[in-house]
Image (cartoon, rainbow, N blue to C red):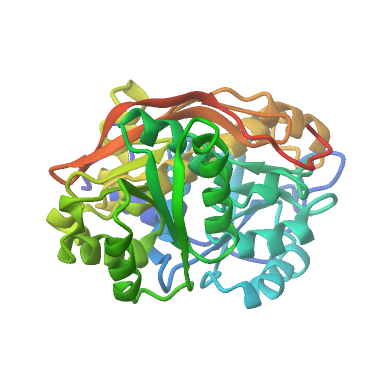
Length: 404
């Protein structure tokens, strides 16, 4: 007999019930939940496009597992209907995004589309899904455009925008007493947007950008850039790196002896979920994020235990975003009692949702981007601990969004 956690879900139940179900089921009709000719109800098809290989593999796995955990807690049903998962590895490769999204939308005819992690993949995916495509929930990709110029009634995000990862950082760094900052980031859209948002709050308040140092994505050879950083002698450096790149950057920064003279900050992905890999090199690093390991609220305590029991892994922000994606879909399907054809009513229920998330209170803007608190965190003994709230109810400008 398998041991059950507080939610009544054993790890065996989670693995079996979360697996891909039998394919070839009828799609939902506009008159109500789809049914088989013999009277049985069709399964709801949830298409997942996340990376399970490469730099972002752990991110994708934690998002998927946490979403499936939330569904398992609800009896593996959406509006009373069983779930079928169609799970595809995006490999975080933009070149494959259109083909894989097309497979989920046109060939698999999914009812919901969940993904991705990489912002450029996200833009390709949303361009195909927005409008008449399936209801889409983005559990990580943070490009501003996704809830900006590419916003649509059927597209939601349970993660963040790049603006939310940069703008609160400016005041946080200044409040810590650092006025001369170097910006370093992977040189693609998301990294550039984080840097731009940081400058938008940092410069008007009296800060100085000593230099911007964009580095090629996904390369992790940082030595030459760190040598330049040492010569510039800023008060602090604000960064965007994630996954394996973040591990390498933090370790190289410490090995170069820069921790003694330059304070290291960044969007929260710099240390998120990476404590074991970064070790002592991460101690003292400060980051901006909408989640922290030590958030003291009942939802976070329950979630961290349930995720550990179900998967054997420690929860992180990626898991939180996947869990909240599952909750948002559950809310929509409950409102229409499983009728995937009732899109307008489902969308209204999702956009009015107020979620008691492990991150704290979560609601959605008119552009369907999260509104939530942003925390300044510091790594202490391997944990991302809350230093203070950097911004309360941080919204996003949603530039170019027709919904807003």
